[in-house]
Length: 423
Length: 172
Image (cartoon, rainbow over all chains, first blue to last red; front, side, top):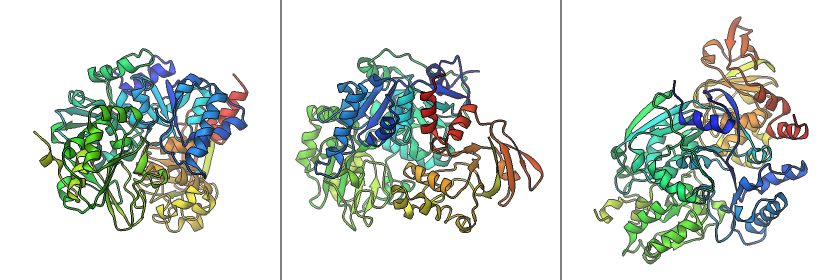
């Protein structure tokens, strides 16, 4: 009987010849990624005089907190993290500080930390995002510091649901749209399992799209999502990998609790919200809704593919005078690439503003310049749409893919980007 | 590790934020006021729960317990524990709920078809290591998924942090 990719990764990481769903394993993580909210974990380590087991495998990504004023944020947390890293022997370059900063849901991929076939530990509920890199990515909120201390993580090998893909996504349809459709159709069917993607359709998905899909694991109720290590992932990961990695593959006769078949050609532009991420509709059902604010960014929608999509819609055009648009690239690397490729110029010339990389406007507490007033409507690239998330509880938030956000900013109402795209 | 208690039965897809705890009390969770949040647990689902729950009671649930937004997970778990409930036994759990609960020292057990042989008010006894149990009220046998030794150790230590401190202090 064959094994799923999950079983293979966890068997290898726990030193077992093979494992089966339900088995308790203790796995060695390849890397443990913290963010700049993680200073809250230090007291337990310091009071118990614990050193992290392998400081070379611990990284910090500065992504939430950039407040320069007294009372929190960069003033308090960033120095605490720098001091902690120094005391623990965590190498300087493992801190993705200002100038190299960005989301913990992006940097581990860019910087060769999250590798195919390994166990990845992330400090945030969205940490399954790294499953786009073919690793078993565990969101480890509340336990990440203990995993770092022990150098190991306990896991019950999850059952696996398979999503088999064929076809190819249409132009402008990105990770967000795939996630929203899976959310709509599978949300209560996954229940803590791992979700593995297979099939010829995967090859057509960029790494950005794969991470955009895996980002939605927590919302869908999966423990994590894993994409296979195909030629495209090897091309991305190979040059970046800090260590050699082994290509593990699910066996053809692996056992899944369920398989869902999808044709990527059938995926279309979707919009979620307002108020609940579970309210998911095709774009045409909400087209025409007036908007006041537009946000390109977040762990769901701030990647190069997203900036490219928005720039393609906005190039040579001007956003609606009643709309304010903020663009927050997911990382310093993406900002540089977007600048080099002319996307930033197109966005700025259209009237958007571009901020420092970070989580940004997704959450009011991050102090983005984009804050919603009562009665306003925003369309966002993030996955959080509950009332109050981006400012006033009396503002409404819709989540959509980058092209839709850009077209909506142009028209001042939710709009279809396809009329603005060359064939 | 043996659990024995009176049960409260709930259905499928109980959301961490919405069913286990009402989302309008999110601020109580954020400010760690779990004792106060406990007075609102299951308010939208079992209005009589908060006033009548006793220490040692058990929650029996259907599929996908702890569904919905991950933001509410820890508050829901801590509030549920603060009511005095000793464990939850569900057909399945959503996302990382089960893991968070165990790491917080709260037993989140799995059992297939548990709702077919239980009703609110029944007295249950179950041995977590063997998975064997009995519905004392109905006189029938029940089974839960046996809990691995390491997880019982984590639970008996009071959660992952105290478990880890013990483990680091006494190298085997």
